[in-house]
Length: 171
Ligand code: S3P
Image 1 (cartoon, helix red, strand yellow):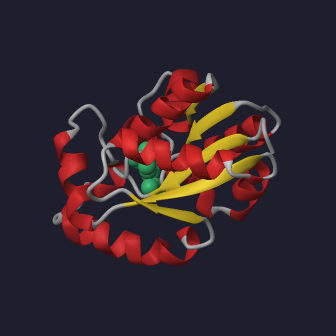
Image 2 (image 1 turned 180 degrees about the vertical axis):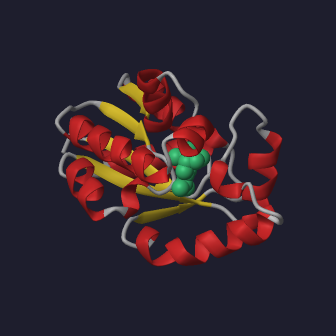
Image 3 (image 1 turned 120 degrees about the vertical axis):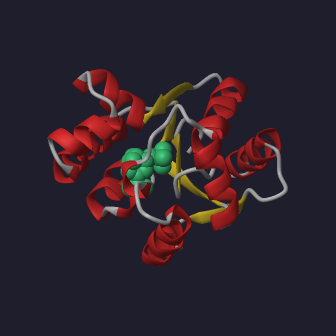
């Protein structure tokens, strides 16, 4: 699987984009962030898409992108938190890719998503974001468990990227 893509999944704020960019640099692969691609193509931010077109329309855009990227190689793909939990998307992207799931605690996720004002997460616009994080994480635990899990707590993004690189190259 030498030229297979690396697909990063996991909950919002687990570091997929930061780690993905490092991996792309180490391997000389192209980095793709599915949220950024959707925003660039639609000319709208994710919150605008959710607000004006609805979540279902956003999920259809994710599905189109999963199919498109599944046909390419030498990519590092950082996926939106729910994209790989859809079976069709996972089959399309997983066919030519090693999938890794980044994990963090709800508290770490809360700190990262509130510390990053540049990215608004419509699914966390709740009365109590930490409760919503815990609730969504519980709903998704089983889905994420299908992929190789990487705990990011107490690791720098460089350490997480190195760990993924070792796993990828061991194949
Ligand atoms: C979502 C995660 C977000 C983005 C959208 C929905 C989710 O991406 O796709 O807000 O359902 O988990 P990140 O995981 O990159 O924050």
